[in-house]
Length: 409
Image 1 (cartoon, helix red, strand yellow):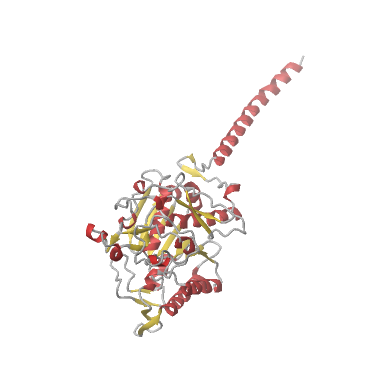
Image 2: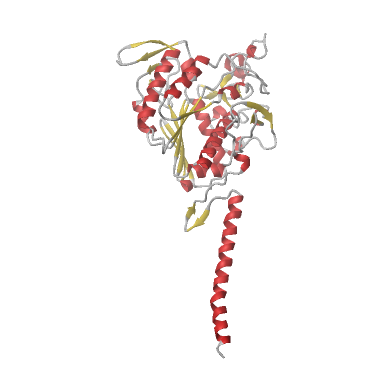
């Protein structure tokens, strides 16, 4: 007589449990499917739930692979990683297509390391790694190109109205509210202090460097989560540079390599005294090569990078890249007690004689005139790079390293 009511009660209690179990399984399946598809953000009461980044097997770089050694391969299917016309944050100096360059081949070369593959840049993964952090690119206009490249690489996945860009000299700050992150650029062409430190009103011909001080710079560097330094081209104007070391009144000429070493040691002292390696990462991009004399790769021809449309296959090392400076940089960094990682962009960029702005950029803040473009031997810029272009690969290398860090920790 009591059996049936007891069974009914069991069913009454088991049925809701079954429904809850199905709901939980469905929710788990939804989360896993989204994670697999690299969708990391889930709206919950106007906030985003953080989900761990999925680093797939084909994104893992083996310890034996040197990502800085390889070759450029043609890829007009997956490159460029963004379009010039879709990124409004590029300065006129680097928008070569808009400025009239007739070919776009320079956008379609992909860096292929020997023995492994670079993970393709994923904007959402990069932003998730930058969540609640600041990344700052510090250096001259070459480094500004790397900053603009990073902004263009991530901006396509950011909602309209959720980001701002502002100039606070010597900084330019791209702020993304959704991720509580900022991508920043800091003008410091010599790293140490100089009379060229004003972001827009700086002297080019007259240079005076304070080799023993980063005092004015460090106030805005401190506390930044990821620092990416670069300093080379401004040192190479002449074999000697006017500088002070110790007394600010004692101005004298220094050999460039001596001055560079002293400046790096000053910078290194700040790194050791101010960086918390548990919370901060520091990178240093090696010299960005120039292609000022095409007799170096063609022989017997008096010209420069103008009209170059193909990379070199190598081996090649131009006279614009100073091996002694490279050796000093490696030596100073190796002696530091804080881990600073080299982004060794020099050799891979050496091959890219085709990637410069040439006559399709600016000179003293103005686009070249038709008459100036007709004189490439005088006016071609074989220092700066078109975007999209070579600096995107520098950021892809940085992204790959950060991704391995994320996976390992």
